[in-house]
Length: 256
Image 1: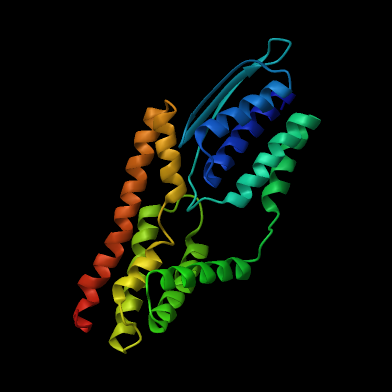
Image 2 (image 1 turned 30 degrees about the horizontal axis):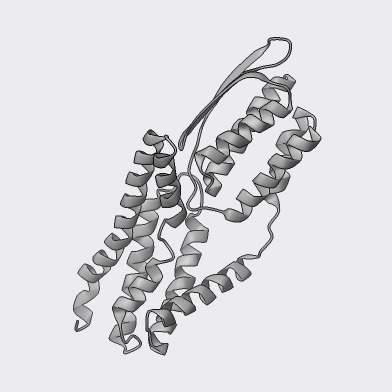
């Protein structure tokens, strides 16, 4: 490939990983334009949707390259990766490495793990301990919430890959959490099953995507904004749907 083709291929991969990690479109657009500008590209045209990217540019000699890339959204945001990508963007704009080296720099940035799965799981347990106490849950409720948190974290590790539908993941996760809560209530290990369900549902609320959706609407990206609002609304309904399904299937085991 020519240097220009390497640059275009990298820029599209870079934009895809930023979107998957939770970046808003304005941030993605700004990063791509800055990278292309730092390499002296002219007549740069970048079009982005949350599921599709296309980039067209030319170099000083007038050679033009156009390419596109479909974005397969991940299971959730990854702010650690997003921070690394922002840092890589600034590094590229300042140092201008050879275009052939860009793909390797991207892989190196994304392959570096700062926290182990055990540490991340511990963070979830600490967060949901605080949530349960804030909601007024008892020690019994807390035990069930923490058990559900571990189960939902393991499910997320197994299903956390591009191409897995987030709504299916939400329904399955809350179905498991709701079923466990009902079974624990049956043996007297839950005082308030609603607190357990509400606390565990916080693990799946698409907060950052919702913020990005409304930001798109306010910044003039109405198409993306409407699509994202609809997407996060359906994902939130799926969270409720999993709990409702667990109550429908196993609610007869307890007295409400």
